[in-house]
Length: 238
Ligand code: ADP
Ligand code: MG
Image (tube, rainbow, N blue to C red; front, side, top):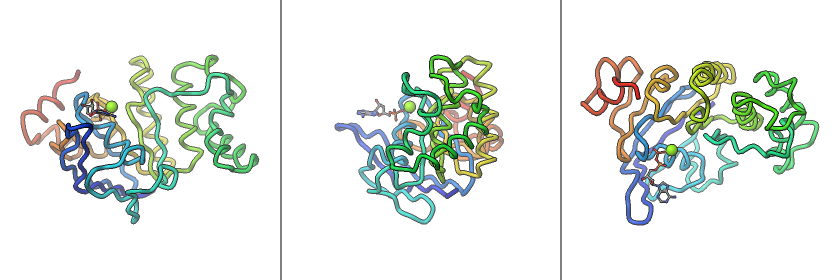
């Protein structure tokens, strides 16, 4: 695991500034949740942490390393997306191991890492199946497994549960938190769902129009919102 620090981050697309001076410090092993309305910049911040986008200004640190300019695979992060984007013609085993394979990892190492992740995710009896032979929840677990086999220091989640039905969403919240605890990683989790944020986070970062409105534990935000935006956003479930 590793701490994650964003300092003075700014980002524009075309001539529109979408991230307007963001400072966030996430502790080693923390489960931090970025929450805010659609379009406030959550995914953009996560993509910059992952190295899929570069900030126009500011510094990103992971652990004791400044990672601005480092390519995604040298940052020690793995991202789980909203759309699982599994390869339809590949088995669970191959979907989970594909990233390691193209990185040149020896087949024996891939097999043991995939087996370990599959066991932890309850997928060990399904390694030969194709994605279409899995339920939505199982597919989401494969997507998590694909991120896990790379032994990241930091997990990045971009609305990973929004394609699942309500009941499964609740169950997966618990599973993701348990996995975070068990793997002892740092997690940065993005959602527009207040309940998800309140139930999963060690600390919540409330974003609005590319800026941080407030950072605090779920209880702090609920009991002492810093303004009416936070009060309304945290207080009224969607
Ligand atoms: P969120 O994830 O909170 O819904 P995003 O980070 O995806 O928000 O987007 C923040 C803003 O930046 C939005 O107004 C979005 O339209 C804009 N945006 C995001 N990515 C791009 C891009 N590649 N090109 C142009 N505008 C973008
Ligand atoms: Mg988004």
